[in-house]
Length: 86
Image (cartoon, rainbow, N blue to C red; front, side, top):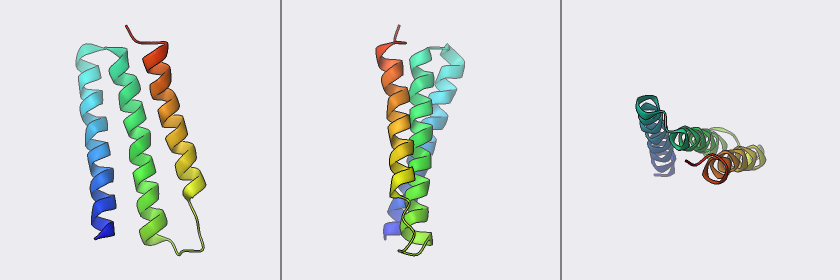
């Protein structure tokens, strides 16, 4: 059941990224771009979670790379919300 949930989380984040990018291409509203980049990073985080928990053996831990990607994604969104919102 866990592989299904991890896969669905990654697919939903990827779908959000796609829809936000499509919205940004239509309107050029920069906050949509920052949000799309954030969701792109969250997609990468979810893929890393799937790889970490399902594919790799327990001796290999990808929690630090997952946290770094998540922090960078949230940093991009914070930048967009604080300094670049119109």
